[in-house]
Image 1: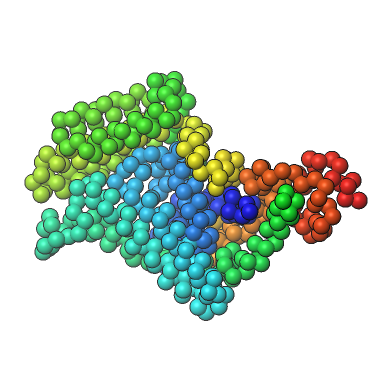
Image 2: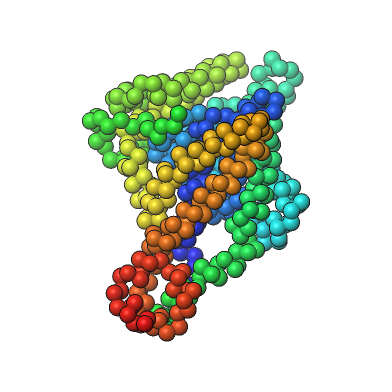
Length: 227
Length: 242
């Protein structure tokens, strides 16, 4: 009856804590990789949210993070805050984060339903492969927005050399420099998500039927009482 | 390190007194106007007007300069690029658009408190109330604000622990413990919410109180699953069960 109305307490807590995690990932100092290259954790946190929470809770968590940031909490990258981030030239990436989390959530849920996440050796690889989907999704929103707001062409056309103005485009400025870092973060997020699914089975998928049956029991009872 | 103080400062300026929906509408309308109009003179006029509006809200100097500095840098790069390609008028128009929309957005952020803005968002989400009741949104926002320092603390602690083991360059040694502790924290929080019957308000609010009929068939396990709040409201249900 009321199965789809609202979130359960567990979902509310997961959504709120993951929104908090995304926000916190922009606040803590950067982590240095082995080569000394610093990485920020924001993309990692977004991908992890999609892979761990499933589509609807990930949508809620990332939207909640965006709403709090737009409402004025300084939780966007580099301590930025407020509406100027969304209306600025990089605002498309924020929309891309929401879309990417939902897409990843669907993939992760499908993997969980097929029992892939329960298999130890396969889970991390499958989650990393799923996470890689997020990269084109984020840029599919971010790049046209950047190109539109800064008047750059989307693709470099007739590019001949470094000093050629034709080489400056949204793809060469807004995508290529970030791809290596993105791949590293997605790999990390896939490994961490596989560990989480092993430590807490039933966040998504197969064991969900049992958990849901348990949480639905009081409601069925109420339905019987009201009928 | 972590401050949740945004751009807003309580002041008494015209924009501070204006309602949130008016400011958001102004921002939306002005953004569309800026992006549609490609006449450089209008563009400069709008830019000056937006900068004046921003100044009229008496914004905090440091945060505003940082926010505007970034956008001015982008605008400068854009201008250089367009001038390089020989499109002077387009350069002026694009830079004007970028700066004016950023200034107006900052003006709205500086003059609207987080509470007002969240009230506005909740009002916008009212058509969704069958899926997402306003109480649930409120609980989520409050919990998120509480979870931010908690998640940051877990991350920092995991780094300290990794460093103590000589693993401060191992990203896995930092991220795996912190992520699983974060999920564990969330699940405990969920149990605490469930135990207090807080989150159930959205689901069970319109279901009539089960009186009488439940006691016969209700198994002990199902009764344990119920939040204690509901048990407390009908005083005679406890005695009826005996």
